[in-house]
Structures are given as structure tokens and as C-alpha cells.
Length: 331
Image (cartoon, rainbow, N blue to C red; front, side, top):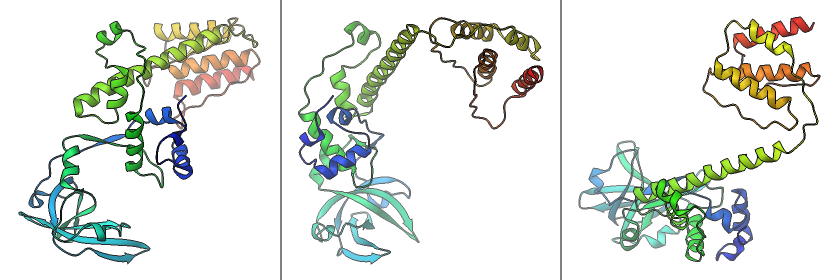
């Protein structure tokens, strides 16, 4: 359990509620709220080399006034910028304060998506950096987080920066032998680098460690649930029935050895003294549905109800035929 989000500077009641909408209730949740993507901040290019549909940065000077107009309930801010290779129009929405920031002849780095408007290219809603500020993030991967209305990526990034700055060291829970065998990064390195990797190699290294941890904890959780269910008495006794064997014999094909083994394991578990906890996993067409159908028949033959939820609109023909035969014999 982490600390309250209110311990972070700049998080008040309104911002805290926005984080709640994302399922982030404390600093531990925030630490594990990993980016959904990353922006690669590359070196600025010449205006003449810009291409439609790309996200690029240009180092240019403001060469016009900054104009604010209104349309369809929103403010539209336009300006022109240029470098030694050409001139480019830029446009922002609902950011009127830029009129006081973008002074004529001032130099900035503009980074945004290039779109085509009629016969000319335009940069739409770019971020604006001083050359020095852009130099600090040049060639880095900047995190892009899942957001909700009213919460910006800049705010989330700022809060995580603040959290990591004061974050205590975590105790490493994986033995060194395991980390060396699977080439896994230290947990503290991974937690910090997944948010702010210096390059793609660092990103993949931290991601590999966190994915390993996620699968390991999932498997351990499943194992704990299984052990718990094995100790829970089965209050709904199931007796084996010849009906399932007759259905298997009447199928228009023979079950494979793997399918029969899976069925007999389920049959044994259902008729055992403890609750069954089992997941049948396999490729499309591997026979999962016929196994589920047999388990349903076993339950029905013992006086219980069963339901089958199937993602396809229609069941496979062999299942439909087997079900029809079963219903006919019951009637």
C-alpha cells in the first residue's frame, strides 16, 4: 500500500479524483501505472523536408503575428514560422496564452503532426520548447500515459517524476541466480526506467523484468488458489455416469489421446472430494468445446444445471449433433 496521492506536490482534490478515474488511488498505483506508448524526440529537421502524416520537430523563428479567432465554440491560434529552408503555418486550439509567449523573431523548437490543408503543409497543435529545453530530451523516449478528461500527459509525467525522485529503494525479491539465468534487470532499475528510458535498449530491458514479475506473480496466485480449492470440500457430489462414455462412442470421430486424458482429469476432479479448479487451454479446433460439453452432461446427469457460453454464433456441428442425441435419449 502506497501513500496518499495528496503527498505529491500539486495534487489537490480535483486532480486526485481524476487519478481515481484511472484506477490510481495511491502512490504505489501511480508507480505501476506504466506508459502505454513512448514519443521518440528526434533532432529537428528542416521545414523543407517535412512530410504529411509524420510527427516531426523543427527549429524555427516566429515570423508573423500570433492571431486568435473563434469558430464552433473554440479558440483557434495561428502563426507562421520559418527557417533557412522555408516557411510553415502552425495552428493551436484553445491556447490563447501563446499570444504572449510567441514573440516575433523568437526562436523555438516546434514539435507536432504535419497535415495538409489545401495546397500547403501545416503543423497542427505542436508542443513548443525553448532550444535548451528540447536539448535536454533530445534522443530520449518520453512516456505517453493513458488519460482521462481534464488530466494531461504533462501532469502525469510531472507527478511520476516527483514520485521517483523521493522513492525509497525496493528490496529485490528475485534471487540473483534467477536474474542472471534469465538476464533480468534489478527491480529498482526496471521501475524507474520503464517510465523514462534513455533508449530502446533500456526500455526493452526494464519491460522484460516487469513482464517476468507479472507472469511469476500470476502463476503463484493461481497456484495458491488451486491449493486453497484443493482443501475446500466439494459439497455437490458428482458420480461418474456411462452417458458420457456413450456420447464419446457415438461421436463421428474418435477423441485424441490428449483430449481423453483431459476429459478423464476433469471427470476425476468433478467426482472428487475437493472443489475443482481447472483451466483448459488450447488452439482453435483443439477440442475444448467437446470437453466442456461432456462436463455439462456429467453435471446434468447428477441433477445439476450447466450453461455453455460460446463466442461463436453457432456451435460446431459435432457438438450440436451430440446434444441432440442426448436430448432425444433423455426425452
